[in-house]
Image 1: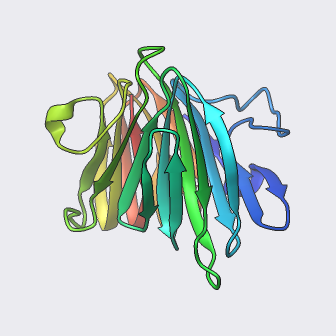
Image 2: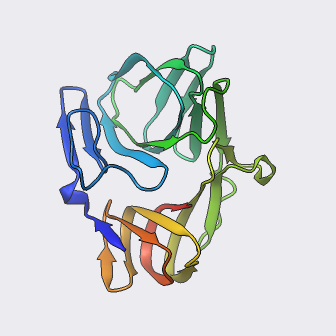
Length: 225
C-alpha cells in the first residue's frame, strides 16, 4: 500500500490553468510516480473562464474526463462536439490517432476536472468517443460502476481491463479483494485504509492485499485492475 498525498503532487500554473499532477507529466518528472498499472495520468485541472487546451493529438490512450464543477466544451477530429458537466463522464479512445480541444465555455466560472489517461489494451484501433450520464444512477453508500471494459455493463466503455467506480459515502465500510489491485482517488471528505487516513484529494494504491476501507464521509473514485 502506497499513499499519494495531495500536497506532494506536481504543480503547473499559467494564467488560465492550475494543475496538480499525480504522476509524472509534461515538465513534472518524478521517477517514483510514473503511473500505476495501466493508469498513466490523473491531472487535477482548474481551468479559468474561457481558458482551455487548444487542438492537440493523442494515440493509444483511453482519455477520460471527470468533471468536478463547471463545464467542459469538447471538439475532436471525429466530428464530435459536446459540453460535459458534473454527473457525466467523457471517454475518448485515441486509438490510431485523434485530435481534440477542451475549453471552459463559461465567461464567469472556473471548471475543475480530473483528466485521466489509461493505456489502451489494443493498439492502433479506430478512435472513438462516448459519454456516460451517471448522475441519476448513483446510489448513496454504494460503489457505483461508471467505466468498464465490458460493453454489457452499460456504462462508459474503455479499451482496457479496468473498472472505475464513483462513491459518495458516509459511515460506510467496504472490503477490497486481495486478488486485485486498486487505486483510490479521494475527491473530498475523509476515509481510512489500514492505518492511513486520506483527506481532500489524497490517493492510495493497493496491490494484492486484503484491506477494509472505512469511510467517515467522502466522495471519490475507485480504480479496479
